[in-house]
Image 1 (cartoon, rainbow over the protein chains, first blue to last red):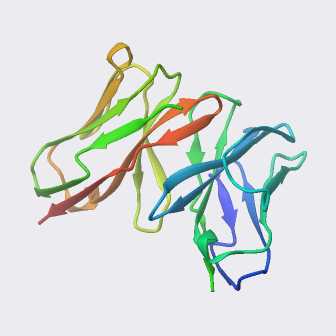
Image 2: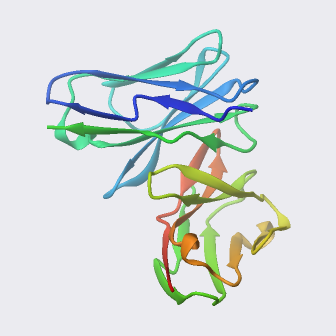
Length: 113
Length: 107
């Protein structure tokens, strides 16, 4: 069974641009969560989607948004990029929402110049 | 919200040594996972262990939910065990991560 797939793996943007990251969960998993990892803040929860509905949201500004499609694939978007948005963005999938084991993808490493 | 503390923050071992990593959490949880982050950034699942004891090869984990801590044991460590180990607990639909333990195993 294929794991969680994230694209792109690496990308470089400049301040003010926007970026879209994609995540395909494990087949059969309906919950997709996003996390941001930075050296200063560690791993922080962004949001979770289940059956195309946002179930939970972390403490991030409105520039961070996401969505989930009917096939459970998810995208997250960051608009008006800032230098501090440089981070590793990790996607996780789970069979159920709110509980259960999470499985992570390899991440998308974003650099904002 | 729930606080998660891992100790020690850094650990240096000689190959073949055993080690114990600790994770303390501040409230009852319905999910606890241990991860190893590989050099490319991926979080590799080690254990899903909200309570009890599990073993997988040279690794084992124990969670005592009533006392709000979990332990990860690494026996006969190898250089490939090097990396960052994270404990994460579930809190209303999200995982709260500790700051990690950075393990370096020297040959």
